[in-house]
Amino acid sequence: MSAVTFGKTPRDNIGRGIPLKDLQDVRKSGFYNLVVSSASIKKGVSQKGKPWEQLNIGMAVLRNSEPIARLYANEFISSNSQRLQDLCYFAGLRDAEGNIYCPEAREFTYTDKNTGEQKTASSIDEFQGIELWAVVQYKGERALNNGSTVPEYQINICNRYGQTATEEALKVHPVMLKPMFDALKVELPPLSAEQMQMNANAPTINAQPAAKPQQKPQQASAPQQHIYTPQPGERVLVPQQVPQQNPAPQPYAQQMMQNSMDQMFGGQAQKINPDTINDNDLPF
Image (cartoon, rainbow, N blue to C red; front, top):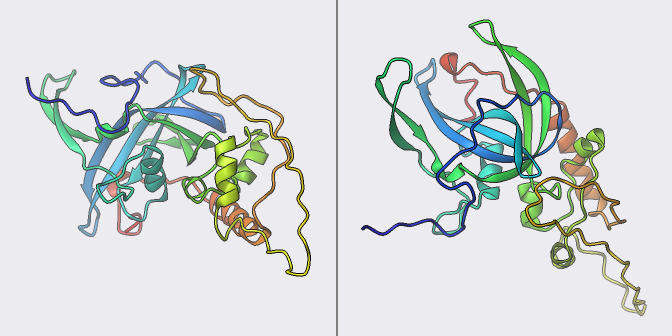
C-alpha cells in the first residue's frame, strides 16, 4: 500500500460533496454559512485569442449543519481576482513560502449519463468541503439561451465576525462590509477575547495617539466584554446584543466604508457568457 497524504488541516465531508441538485436556489439576500460542494474549471479562448480559465463553484447553504439551499458562483482564475484571493485565504491555501495561492486544477474522467461517452473535466479538489461565510446579494434572474433563467449574486466572502480577508489578516474590526450588514439588519457576534487582544496589539491602523509627556496617563478600567462562544456543531449566526466596541480610527473607517459603498452597492453582478468572452471581459 502506498502512502496517503491528507494535507496540514483536516476537512469535514472528505471524499464526498453535498449533493446540490435537490436543493432550491437562493433568491434572497443574506449573511450565509456556506460549504463548497464542487469547484470545477472551464477553459476557453477569448475573441482576441487570449486563453482564460474560470472557476465554477457550487455551494450549499447550511442551517444547523444541514444543507437547506444552494448557490453557484464563478470567478476568473487571475491574480487580479479579489474573490479568488479571499476564497483561497479563508480556505487556508498557502504555498511553501507562505503565499496565498490557488492550486492547479486536476483533470479527471467521467461517463456522460446521457450518451455513455467518456469525457474529461477539471476541478480543484482543495476547495471541496471548505466552509465559508459570505454576504450574498441576490441581484435577480438572468435569461439563458435555452429560455430558462438562473439567479445572479454579488458574493462578498468574510468570516463569521464579518471581517474580510484583509481585515482578519490585519487584526482590525469589520468595517468594509458594514453597510451591507446594516442594510440586512444583521447583528454580528463580537470578536473573541483572543481577537480583541490581537486588535489591541495591531500596529498603526489601530494605534491610539501617545499621551503627552507632561501628563500622567490615567489607568481606565476595561469595559466588560461578552464573549461569544459557539456551541459544538453550530454553524449559523446567532443574533446577540453586540457590546460597544472601539471602532477603527476614523480615516481608515471612512476609506473602507466609502470603498464598500462605491464598489459593492454600486457594482453590478458579473454577466458574462463564457462562450463569447472578449478581452474587455477578462480581468487580466
